[in-house]
Length: 61
Image (cartoon, rainbow, N blue to C red; front, side, top):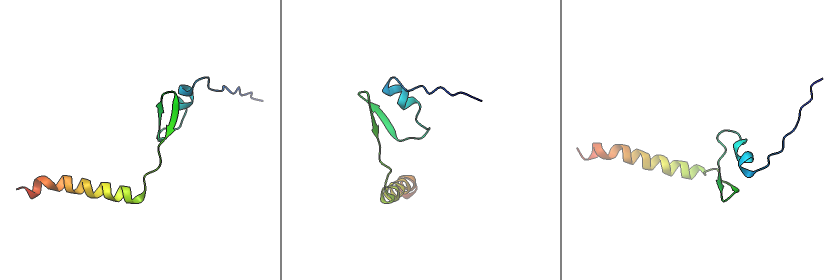
């Protein structure tokens, strides 16, 4: 039979350090601040901007 010891984090940094990779949060003034998931329209607009930026040099030729 295996025994597991649970170690509760002593600091907010330890909590932040143990979050899964890719978790959208920041450690600000010893507080965890979660970032919301971007809306689909945000992603669409971002893609449109990226396309324009990529095509801009070709339009100038």
